[in-house]
Image (cartoon, rainbow, N blue to C red; front, side, top):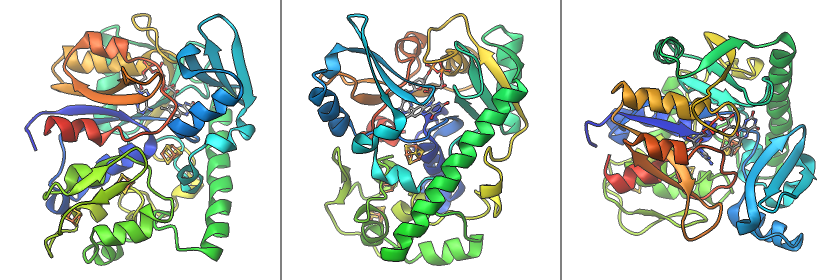
Length: 360
Ligand SMILES: Cc1cc2nc3c(=O)[nH]c(=O)nc-3n(C[C@H](O)[C@H](O)[C@H](O)COP(=O)(O)OP(=O)(O)OC[C@H]3O[C@@H](n4cnc5c(N)ncnc54)[C@H](O)[C@@H]3O)c2cc1C
Ligand code: SF4
Ligand code: SF4
Ligand code: SF4
């Protein structure tokens, strides 16, 4: 790993992978991720199924200006000014199945979490979780990168209700699935000793059995990133191994967000705390960036770069060869951050792929 300090923006599962990699540095080799910015996330979508779904409605992805999820609808705003709406409850055909076993809505292990729910249009909801996150937000406000105001009671109630709904709905799904199939290991949570005991004998074949072959892989790229032998490759569907594992290596199993999670990461009663542990929750916006909501994530990243808090940031733009296909990369440039603002709703290997490719 390099000595670079990176700020990573990611869905709760990607942020959990970064948390595990850094906590189990001895086993995984650690990472350059120094600031974790989590995005709220109810579910994500398969790129190919989303493409197919829209095609059936006579819409090509290149005709889409942006995607939004608003008031219970998944909306594709088209370049010609029209839009296509479908209730979120009817997006099942292109939702990734692994998202049904996920109970973290607000990225509980991030330094700062950001989403739209809870705040008015053009604002983002900001959850400050750690002292590092607080220092960053205090400075962003002081230096004018973002402005904040208290979240409304109604907004906070809504946020809690939606996060609780994800937990209740997906715990029910997990219980149903476990009754007929293998246990969902990431179901919160085991104690630290148990975590180490269970993980220290496991290698990629166990990852295949416990996560990949049972549809649990979130394509975060953490296993590929930590593999010291460079024998994991991830295509658009799943990771696979191309070599032989040394006996004493368990890095991929320790890093994966869908293997066991210790209660030192998610506290034992986390399902009773839908928003996780936090210091403060506010509404925030930035006038400098046109983002998905308040442009807050991009403005925080710009602050981090301009103040040398980090050397580079990990952002998600789109693949030049495929419309709306997420493509992640590391950059020290503010212009790249501005260009990458906005949400790319679909899953392909991103997150750690960028760190792996750059050798960080
Ligand atoms: C898959 C997904 C599902 C989401 N679901 C919800 C939800 O249910 N409820 C809710 O309130 N908010 C949700 N969000 C978050 C919301 O869409 C906004 O990203 C958030 O409010 C921040 O807005 P902003 O204007 O402050 O960010 P911006 O300034 O627009 O910056 C957005 C940042 O996100 C990064 N990014 C874009 N796409 C991805 C991606 N696929 N993976 C990782 N990083 C990415 C970009 O690089 C950019 O840095 C979701 C986001 C994603 C990616
Ligand atoms: S598993 Fe799915 S729902 Fe959970 S954080 Fe990742 S993308 Fe979002
Ligand atoms: S060497 Fe094997 S066990 Fe170690 S990280 Fe790579 S695939 Fe996993
Ligand atoms: S198997 Fe690899 S890519 Fe899939 S969730 Fe686990 S660490 Fe991420």
